[in-house]
Length: 170
Image (cartoon, helix red, strand yellow):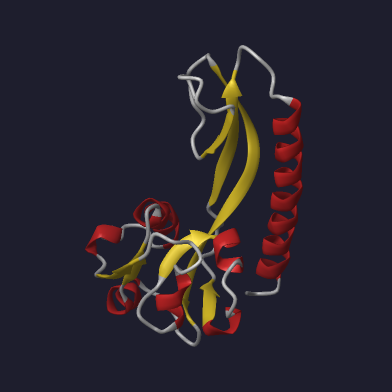
C-alpha cells in the first residue's frame, strides 16, 4: 500500500501508520466446524478428532479456544489431520470426518453441502474486525468507491445470514 501498488485493501488488523486510513469494514464471527453428527464438547474430543489447518487456522483456533476451552494446552497440541489453503475446499475433509476446523461464518456458508457439517456452539462469540485501508493523502477513486459499496452490501447480507443461522442453532 505504501509503495503505491494498491489503492485499497482489507486487513484483519488496524494499521497504526498515519499514512494509512483504516475504517471498520466488516465483522467475521469465528466458528468451530465439525463433521455432521460429531460433538466436540471437551478438549479431549478435539484431540481425538484432529485439526484441519489452513493459513489462518491456528490463529483463529487460538482466539476461539482461549474462550471456549480456557486453560487448554493450545491448538499446537492438537494433531493436524490435514491442511488446505483453498477456502472453497477447506470443509471437504471436515465433511468426510477427517477432522474439525475453525473459520469465519462466511467461509462455512460457502460450502455447498451444509448437511455434512455442523457448527458447534462455543458460547461467547469471537468476532474478528476487518478494516478497509487506503492511503491517507487522497480519497478513494470513484471506481474504488463503487466496488467498496458493492462489497459492503454483500458482506452485510452475508453477516445477516450468519446471525440468523446462528440464531437457528446451526
